[in-house]
Length: 291
Image 1 (cartoon, rainbow, N blue to C red):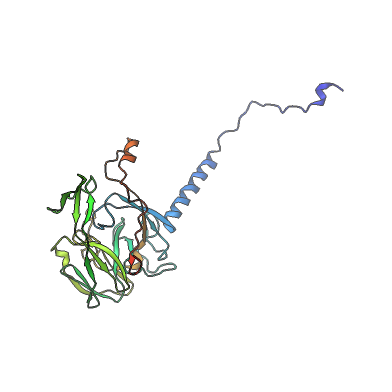
Image 2 (cartoon, rainbow, N blue to C red):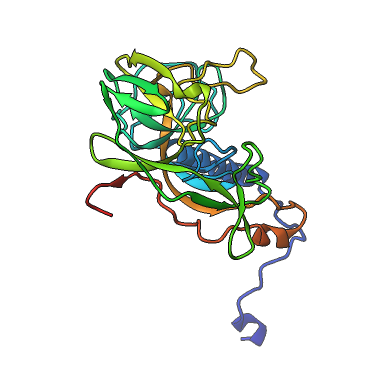
């Protein structure tokens, strides 16, 4: 037998190479996009704080996680708010007083972030900035001022007299803080800058299936006290109590925070703009006895 016959015959090279399976590539990308959208719609999504309305706990530039499932799912759950209003929630559960939630105002496409203060059936009013719930003022305690470092995202130029310089030479926005307690013993910090039109509201009784939402920065928040916008180019308030179907999720914790000095073309600025000490901050209310 010849030696050449002892070896397996090499496969013939026909000179042709397999082309890229473009349909397979496209399907893979589509599946990845659907998985991301599904996660954002039904599990959790990132959220960016664009204003000062939730100070002192949340400041402009904070990035946080909003979970979608605690209250069930509704027409606002999908990542893109393209569905019309539909009553009811799938596996619905009512938020607790004190929760920070995101909501979509009637006729809007963007999320607002506010705190749940009134539940269905409650009678709520504000007098001199104090919340009166079912005829009883919520307990308030004045705390040490919040000293928030001034930067591009927190210029502190809305109200005169708040800017101060600390012993470290850093310029701060010195915000007067009042801790507010719910009847259930939950608490959170609010800001009261003095007399403002929003200090007086109501009384109103919250309809069934609705919630009354307030920003923690009570004098600089477009919330349930403020009317809806009549101009789609200008954001307005929530126009009173909001239907529970408009609640898109609950704020959980801060992931990171930026001071407003980032440039998309400069990767170094992505890190130098990071605020220290904010990542991992939880956003659930405190509870008396657990301090």
